[in-house]
Image (cartoon, rainbow, N blue to C red; front, top):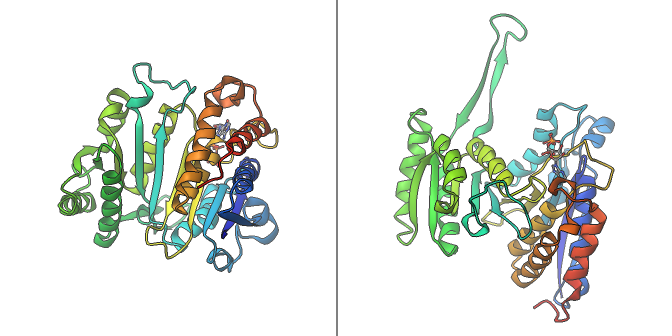
Length: 361
Ligand code: ATP
């Protein structure tokens, strides 16, 4: 029997509710297979840790995660701690420390979910957004001088490297190739950004030659927002820089029905380090501690985690349970217009995961 070592980092706000729920689903899965088991280690890092220790995670934190097979993350964010500290002190430290350069965000309209696009059927909206996760606009390079004075100046420098663009393009083309439509849209802004984005376009063209069976096109990021709303079926796999994909993927999540459903994986495709899976929502302090958080985004993240481990049958089994639960309106949480609690939804998914008699292949 294989043992997978999983780090759980609930973080802040509703992360503390949805990550234990995700762990319960993995435990339910493990109960019905002889093939693998999970060994969990929980890390209490985040804003509470920051209040006690002055840092979001300990200096040797990455070393503690290094030997894990995957990380299940909740959220980082706190009304009393500045966002740049919660973000850079934990999530980005792990993403950058482990060179998780591909951020992958699948979006679909799950059964039973009322999505805002009236003319759109679930078949029209089935996307995976690949976000460059290691450089670009969020490279962290920049500074401030003359702080507080009228002459104050501040910069955030966006850096793209050829190596960084090549690897994310290759990843995106490969992913597009693995999906039935073999269709990739490269998001750009090379009309206005005349240097790095032009290199981005050039590298896309070069890498496309390695994937002659993938159809691809380019779209300006502003035009892409309209295309996502007006012609969703023309998109399948999408690759964009850090900032562009950050914005487009929130739009994608909203178009698919709720922020509470959407998952993401921060992947090191070379598997030198553990990859990290998390719901895309934040800490949602308005509903924390009330048992109202929708755990579906975390469960879908668990599906991605299982796929990353190569446990495809188990992943399918959890996804089928998730879809059966979203199809039942009595199991919708408040963000979907229902009255169900985190505990109801979790119990329903766990029961369905365990119900299938055949052991997980
Ligand atoms: P952060 O600052 O950490 O990014 P936030 O609270 O500003 O977080 P989100 O948590 O991303 O923003 O979400 C905005 C709102 O959407 C929340 O305040 C909450 O009402 C709702 N929401 C987000 N995720 C969920 C969820 N899983 N279940 C129910 N409602 C959610």
